[in-house]
Length: 100
Image (cartoon, rainbow, N blue to C red; front, top):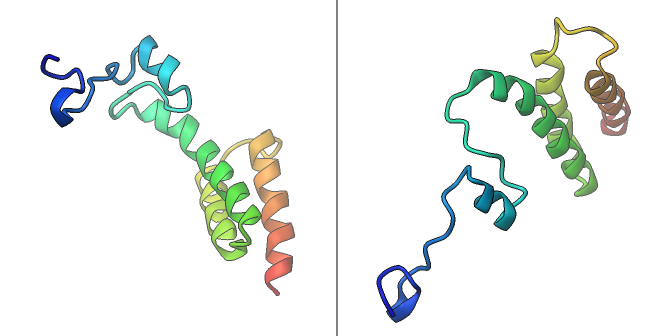
């Protein structure tokens, strides 16, 4: 076995991050965008909403509310009818009522 093929306890080299091959192996990982601010602006709030949903299912209501507060603050100047913002506000209202 040669270098990088998993022999003698060596790790097997995988596909380079951000490539089509990497997406096929690990489809949940986004392509590498470095410091692309547009990508962060588009996906950061979506990921926070996904985290909030997960925290709610785990019973971590206060953590979910904090995530939603971040989403709402990020989109404070967005159109009020933005679907993800509408969802975040409704979810926050429902969860905040549980904390009382």
